[in-house]
Image 1 (cartoon, rainbow, N blue to C red):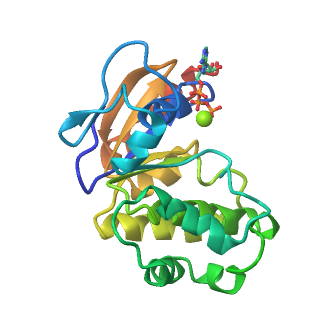
Image 2 (image 1 turned 60 degrees about the vertical axis):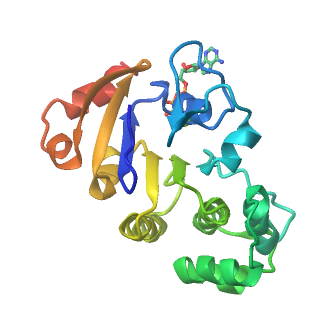
Length: 215
Ligand SMILES: Nc1ncnc2c1ncn2[C@@H]1O[C@H](COP(=O)(O)OP(=O)(O)OP(=O)(O)O)[C@@H](O)[C@H]1O
Ligand SMILES: [Mg+2]
């Protein structure tokens, strides 16, 4: 599996196919039993999650994992923690507010009081505060209203247009393929198909491959 700079690549697959496991392995939260993981010009599969974050890999985990008692602002600032350059906090926060304008009014609220969609925006914003070389997203649309999903995916598309490299997991294959350049289809931990989003959208087997692991 490969993600080139500036690409938005999707991983598709049924429940239990191994999508989250891959993202967790990439982020150093799970150890691969075999194989290797490279980021830019070096292997990272033996580094700690903390070291991998410092190399510029940011994970937006399934279920968002915000600090509900902390303010939106503090949750966002946590994202800049792994950075070693001098961060101008106000400037960085303004960038995030431009991407997610609805967070502006909520900046001092406890993150736990926000709607699911708003919380997902905070989780993406927190990852962006790290100025990642690659952004990993695990099921960002899960549990959100259609309107919120639309807003979130518009933001992902604009991040991609701005050159941010993204690896996206979403159960909603059609949705992910709307924004992805390419995708891999997983079934019980194996890649069973890959191609451009266009190829997979017009692939009659996709639904079958997609459902395979849960059948
Ligand atoms: N450390 C582990 N040891 C053994 N089995 C594991 C381990 N971690 C995950 N699994 C199993 O591996 C499979 C893949 O899990 P994973 O969470 O990656 O799937 P997923 O594609 O993200 O599914 P979902 O769509 O439900 O989020 C599951 O059957 C899970 O129970
Ligand atoms: Mg998962």
